[in-house]
Amino acid sequence: MKRFGRWLVAIVVVAAVGAGAWAYWNLELRWRPKTITKNQAQIAKILETAGWVSPGLKGGKLYMVSFRTCPDCVRFKHEEYPGLHKAGIDTRLIEIARADRNGVPKSTPAERATVAEMWVNRSWALSETWDATPVEAWTAAGIAPADGDVARTAVIEAGRKTVEDLRPLLKENGVNFAYPLLVWWTKDGTMKACACERRETYRFVRKDLGV
Image 1: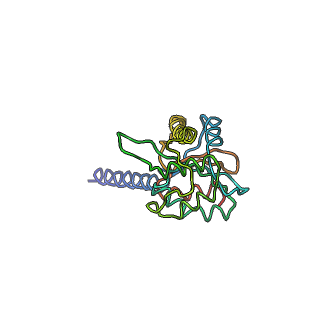
Image 2: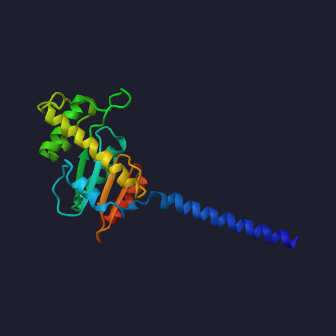
């Protein structure tokens, strides 16, 4: 009977430890961004040379790779941009017009025209206007079309290549590319990244950036 009691206590202890470890993983570890220890220079160069737009603030840098209709990207902008900007964080937005997949269009002519314009002329004001307009109402009025324009089509392809170049470099650091992809540097210069699709990741971004 005593032996049974000891086994029962041991089982309860193991179960409690296991439950605690799972809870810690579920609430904390699984959402933490990855520290980029490999390919840092290559990743930084790809981001810096992309056609990003930003409000031109003087604080830390936060790169965000996005596409206009990505719901998780829209949520991050809506919920996090105001606080980040108030803290002086320069949100460097890299919009992508995704390639067709299996014959299914993943972008529209208006989207491609707007992305090309943002990459070429680097207008933060345009990105704000675009984000503030319902997708179905956006016609890219007054913006040169990308379709049929060799130079602007090349810009669209450059954006897609940015994503494809980043995928393997980030994967070596444990980051599986997804939108929005966020890359930033902590106060001590450590590069961090995450595919921040869930709100649970946001607090780590804010903490690292001192917000």
